[in-house]
Length: 174
Image (tube, rainbow, N blue to C red):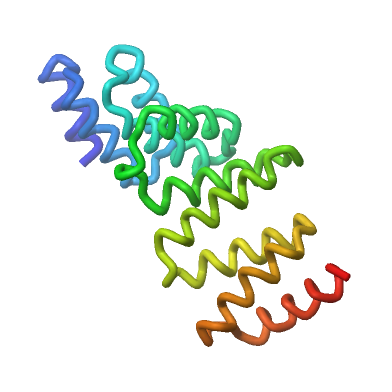
């Protein structure tokens, strides 16, 4: 389909709606580097479509090698230009994970705040709870690890690894 979109773009005179459809195809095909370059091209001419910042932010995070700083800029631009009703769970979780990957100690608390916001939007996502707990344990944020794993325990979704991590977090938090 991507080859067909390229032909369509050539025939349509590279109009913005056609480029957006092409960008969405690239994203779905997991061609993240190309997605970012097309998004940047569109945003140069038309920055009224804020969701392109979302897609570009996700793509910068997912591409190999990842560009976390660029992903952060795209996500911050997205949040600055959106309304709370247009934010989805993935926006918070991607942004939180991006902030964690930047390895900047001044951003760690903000990263966990974003991840918790994502969880609060979907309290059934036990995988996200596990992800937050494990990353918090690695970051030596034992209070967050304890909080997240206790939620999992209260929902009767904890497994033996969760209980072991919870015990270690309590021990380290003394």
